[in-house]
Image: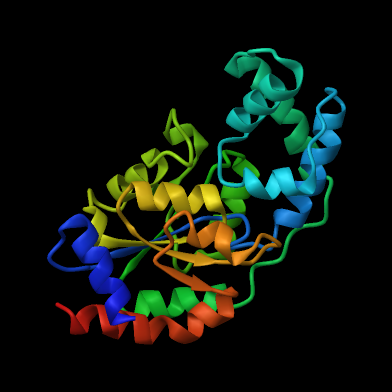
Length: 245
C-alpha cells in the first residue's frame, strides 16, 4: 500500500498525502440503490422512446441525470435537447425511482464513517443527484457524521462527473482543501475518473456488476470488493499514509 501512495505522490508532485476529509459518492457507495436506479432509468426513458439498459445505467452512474439524458437522446434520436427538456425527462425518472422500495444503507458504511471521524477527518458527500428527499435522507441516516454544508449535489456544478468539478466543489466545501488533503470513495467509472481528474487519492469499491477493470482503467488508486472490506483496511491505509509523512 505504501508503494501505491508513493506512486500517487510522484504522479502529481505532491510531498505528502495529508487527508483532512473523505468525500463519498452516494449511490452504490452509501446506499445499495443502483438496482433501483437501473429499473427507474429503464422505465422512465421508455416513455420517451429511449432504450436504456441496466448496463447503461451503471456505466453512466455518477453523471448528472440531465447530462445522461441529453447524451442518450442525441445518440438514439439524433436530437440536441436543452437542459429544461432534459430536466422534464429526469423528473419522470425521479418519480419512478421514488416508487421503488427504499434502498438500504450499504453494509460497512456506518462503521467506516465512525473510524474516519475517530481519526479526526471530516466527511463529505459528492453526488450527481439533486433530489431533496435523498439529501434529507443523507442527513437523517448519517447525522452523526455529515453536515448539509458538506454535501455537493448536481446543482452545485455546471459540469458533472466525469469532469473534476464536483470533487473540486467538494474540496471547497470541506474548507478549501487541496487535492492531497482528501480521499475520494467511488464505485462508478465516471466517478473514479472525476476523482482522479481532481488529483485526489481515489478509492474504488466495486459494489455493482461492472468488472474491476472498468474502475482500474479509470485510474483508481485502490480497489476493494465491497465496503466492509474497505472498512477492515481503513486503519491500515490511514497509518500507511502517515508513515510516509
